[in-house]
Length: 260
Image (tube, rainbow, N blue to C red; front, side, top):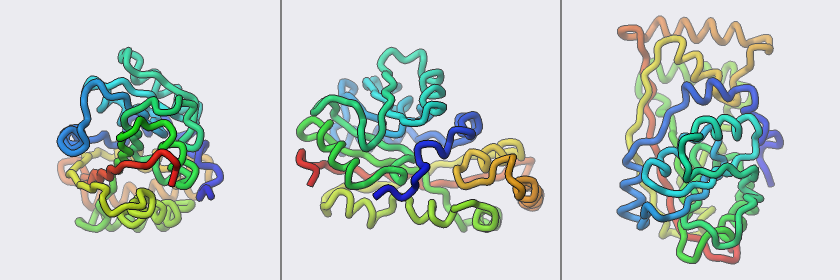
């Protein structure tokens, strides 16, 4: 059962901020998949929930052919524009539950920062269908470190205070137990890589606005939220910047071809 009824529309009015202010993925993701999952440049990737194309770009730069499967029209258009110079990219108007891809057509199914929007039962069966025998599912996630600095602790408190459903979204993130249940196996791989972003106030504001649970500018508590954000930035900035630290989490495993 889908956790969020409006999952496919949540980012329609946040595309520009998402493009500019969301973190990319470290090159170590490719190294890990090459060394542990046998990723080759000739492999075909289905990037599910490809959005603005951040994860697709990582695979395209490695030399892979990528199908970017994205259900949101605005995000789809942004991904097409962002990756327009990559001939090995093909956008697909589909979803995790209905990718529109052919059976046994891809070597890797990848999901970057999107897995929590999927129906896990239906998408698992769909991934099993489109994967070639021996193919891999890879779930990649930039998880913001919440409490390692006073700034990050106060930012987290701001999200709980003003976020429309931040607690629910946060609880849905693909952590270890959820991945164990999805792969139905103890043999899946997990690995963490460091990642970070530094922001001036404009960047920090855009990073907040890019979040699906942040009130939008037409909501009554938006200005109060931005005022509080400015107070936090002023209190903790050093040389005009604050820093987000992330764990880039990688989960990788194989599925059978019956959706079981």
